[in-house]
Image (cartoon, each protein chain N blue to C red):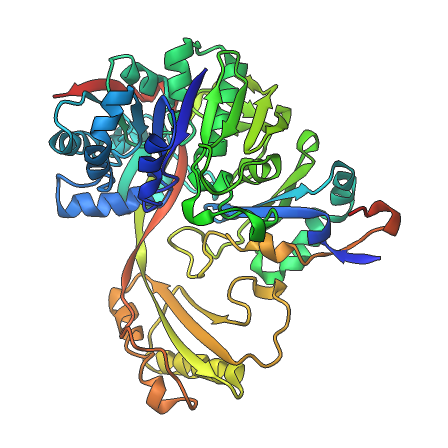
Length: 110
Length: 444
């Protein structure tokens, strides 16, 4: 079945220069492998489309059941150069919550 | 055990927070983080206009307000409120709170030394782009090295009530009291890393105690009276994150994780002037209401290079907005944008970038926004930037005429012509540690 990412994880996002970072945290430990499987750099890059001019890196934090995503050249120059209202990428974590992920119904516990 | 509370996450944060941290329960140290990356450039602009400014101006009146309670309860303050002018900040604090002992940490300001560094072959390449600093040499406005917790601890060791630094690593404000009190050395890597992790968790204030938190956010209690975070640090490097009883907000491991991941790069190598912290080694446990215990943090030796925060003039920018309502709100806003661009083109004005956003449609989430069929209103925001201030100024005169010369029903222009703003951009670079000598001065 297809569900939004928000069912299995929560997020917080911010900036370092022109790099946006999105921390993605599994609601439950057993959702962490699903994060690894579904929230891949390639999918995140394509999800944000032209907004992310550079690549996407993913770092794993297995003990905290979380991943950290770095979206390069994602903030229109970043900081004070960027003309965007959300120049610091504060809302990008929320945007990612709608990412559609594929999950086996048995993997989902509420 | 020592209690370290952080009462400001940036300059402009909630003014009541540090006062309440002191009033609502016991703490030993109050840290205040005033400096975001863009803040140094703002402070530099203010110092250009007045040589006695260039620090966080909210800080001296705050110390004046809490001075008596600081003394009565033996609470020490550690703040990077000094910005680009710590000594002037200290003088203002002494004026607001006579009788307190104030120490400043100097040596982070490297603006006068850029040419010396270049002559020595330090290229100070932009960490993000790889460009050498020579490409912006003529436009540099401020340059500061990030200093670590040891000089701050040295300032605490003078017996100062208030320690003021300029640019330091944010988390160093929280680590410094632990070094001062527990006597940790520069090779106590795991303990230093634990202090950095604890510092990172509370450096944004209310953002780890329920603010900007997605975890069941509608049910976070009493955000109006949010309690700012307190770290209870132990000499072995373990710590608890908590807040005063009876305050609003919430502290749990999920919220702490959100903050732990906030604005970091590689979590295995969180670089600071004092150590490299491995965030993946942290073990978090909910040990009670509004109480999370952190332990197990591992760290490595401090890096050979210090990070420097350099700001430079990068042109001018302006943003103007108009609001269009139903019917066809999106279409009207798009036509307003097309007309504006055509007029700018006819005027022969050139910009580095013209950028348009549609609030209510896709301004925040861009291509990831879900489609909106027929919004009842849309705000269009057109922004330009470029090296020519006159061109940007001319742009600011092109928005409001659309009300009478563009699509029907344009409104929301009440605040008048947009303001032309200088772009002071940020240039992160590295400088060898041995080039930076800090010193502590007690200001009388």
